[in-house]
Amino acid sequence: MNSRLLANTMRGLALQMVARARASHIGSALSITDMVAVLYADILQVDPGNPQWTERDRFILSKGHAGVALYAALAAQGFFPLPELRFYGQDFSDLMNHISHKVHGVEFSTGSLGHGLPFAVGKALAAKKQNKRWRVVVLLSDGEMDEGSNWEALLFAAHHRLDNLLILIDYNKLQSLTTVAATLALEPLADKLRAFGAAVEEVDGHDHALLRARCKALPWQDGKPSLSKAHTIKGKGVSFMENQVVWHYRSPNPEQLSQALAELAAERAVWGG
Amino acid sequence: MRLAFIEELVALATVNERIALMVGDLGFSVIEPFADRFPDRFFNAGVAEQNMMGMAAGMASEGYHVFVYSIANFPTFRCAEQIRNDVAYHRLPVTIVAVGAGLAYGNLGYSHHAVQDYGLLRLLPNLLLAAPGDPLEVRACMRHLVQQPQPSYLRIGKVGEPTLHTAVPELAPGRWLPVVRRGGKRALLTTGATLALAGQWLALPAYADYDLYTLPLWGMAHKEGQAEQLACFEQVITVEDHLHDGGFASWLREALAEQQPELLLRLQARALHSRVCGAVGSQQTLNEYGGLHCDGRPASDADSQAGRREG
Image (tube, rainbow over all chains, first blue to last red; front, side):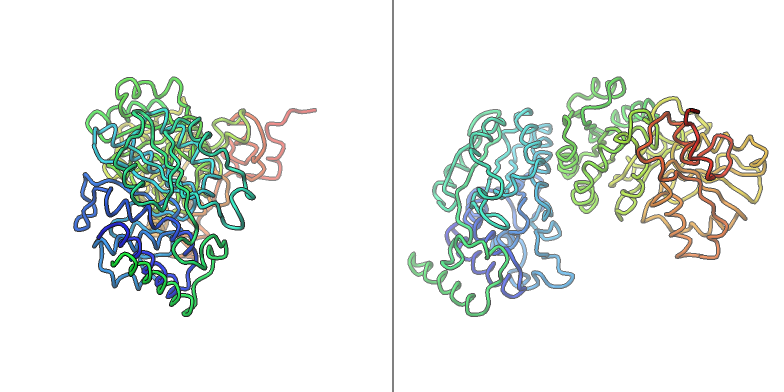
């Protein structure tokens, strides 16, 4: 499945999951869908039939509230059967609303922000010390950069020259209550991240060709962690959800779900997918 | 205990190449033997405990058994959520090592007092507490933890603790270990560095017929069998350098309440009064102030004056 079809499929699955479970955070999931789709379609060396394959690349979703995007990607790629997605958010289900390592293909459970990057740095350090070729990719939210633990981890990753680490920041510019700018100003974010020792690039987080090309060019600088400040749109792909902070919380009702799925079908029809 | 810790860690790491040591920019004149011998397995995380614990979990997820070493509250309270979410919930082999148990760093102030750590860490179902009472128990605890890697907390004193055992004992979680047996019906039961204090009490007339037991390995998953062991005695006095609330005796009481509540009356607790929180002084002064007396007497209202300068 190519990355665009995978992203379209993921969006449809994610919408259906949150609608059925009446769960939050669909806007955050749609925001990262294109990045996750490119990673699983074209970049990550993983084996759906053997999720614990020792030489796999490791992907950590630090913004665990966007877990439906990753569950959808994993199911679509064959890590577990698609029908299992219907258990998302159900009582005693492994597919909890925030991403769970009890699901095949998920490396690490998150939900409290600021945990994914330190964990990823530990993995990258282990890989370096054992001369492993696999990479670590970690995806953070922009609001998550409020957490001091991320800046601690950046210091360490740069000091130890962990260029086997790719950090993606989902820069959709909205966080829990309002915009990132109105919450705690992060700008000039790229300059700050460069000052912390990362090789920083700003990309369009929905441009599959660009994401693919840049992820295939790692590391961007020898001896430095690569960090993509990925400009995205919260709610991307569903017209009435885009850039609306309310979709951090709201779950689509049946009519809204139908409209959203119709938009995705129309997108597929355009490229004959 | 610090020296026994590092000697044992070097010995274990010599035969187990997955043992790593991570420190939070602390351990001067302690950790050098490991750092010098295993530079590829020694990491100074800097003064950044949240990242330190998260990284330790990440390394542990790739096959390492990571010992995370720092003082008192820094590797516990400062990064409590990383311990809960990243280490314990994921069941990763990280051993949190806190040096300066109880009031060992008493003069350094409240920031360095570890008198609430049992309460924090015994709330984690998958985490084993290891509170050795002497340098040989340090080695015994570490051997157990390396043989059975799991989320764990190793609480050690500082320096100069006496050796009470004659050999490295065999330990099992939840099993009381005899140190002195006199065949009586009363016993002192300690965890952690208060073993030395309880050992002193045995020489006093009031404790002439007491046995001395230690329980270095315990935790939420190891309450089974506590009533059975306590039932062998008519009276058991626990000794710990932790607040009464949430500590070792509290754990034991919870176990008894579930198993044989009528045994609760046989249990007395010697632990620290909350008045020690915020007080400053030497370890002995603060222990007395908190109700842990060298002469073994129970805590009383007069303890609040203990160790204070007379006007």
